[in-house]
Image 1 (tube, rainbow, N blue to C red):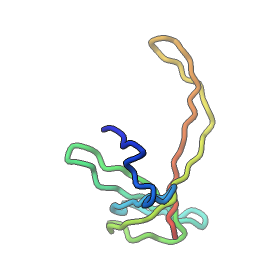
Image 2: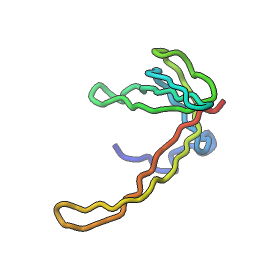
Image 3: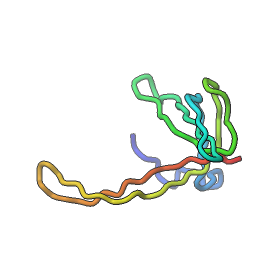
Image 4: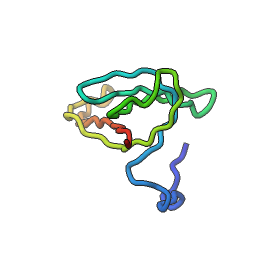
Length: 106
């Protein structure tokens, strides 16, 4: 799958850092004052896996098993870097994991 050129994306319609997530609620949990809803999105085709995402919100987004659409604010953060070694060449490199977050726009 190739990426779309930036010129083909309509900047007038796009809202920076917001995404629409459609899927079925798989599970829900509360932690402190937030609700975390795990959703399974439809697979792209019959031979690929559906994506699973977790959305943080102030209230519940729906019931388990329900299909919903949620506008989310995209965010993320870097974790602590660590060193990895290539088994074939012995070369070492630093890897910095990045975690993506989704917060419901309420």
